[in-house]
Image (cartoon, rainbow, N blue to C red; front, side, top):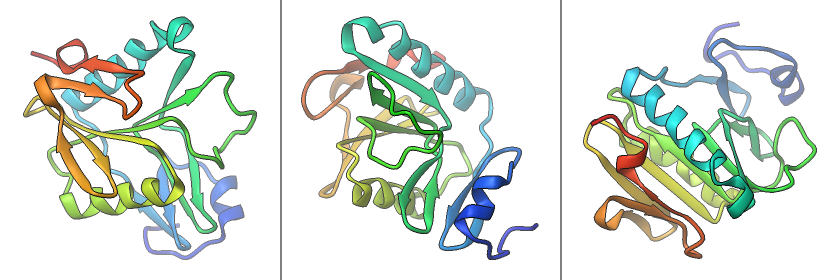
Length: 169
């Protein structure tokens, strides 16, 4: 089954893709496969959160499917959920935080489509991190705001993650 082939949500959920793909309105959408800096950042972000989960009561999960709409399934690089985790294989309610780690081949337009899905789904905190430029942004319905002082923080102040903790020098 190639990119552009229309299938049902049920068929998508029964199918494995390597690497996993998004599902948008019946279409399989390949995700950009991460390179070294992307993979490093993704792994370190998951470790950073998991090292603090007993205090923050948050659990991070890499590349978890989320059904953001009736015919839309997205796979953020990292999902951060309140504990205990929902008892479902594909999240159907918004997590606390979605994090996207940019790759050199990412486009702003494609990234914005994905972020719009998270916003419409009701995700209260959305971060985009560029490991090549050592920059991060908080994303809301009002737009992208650069992370002040290289600190990624959530709207409620519960989390403040320094980019230097999770990015290659």
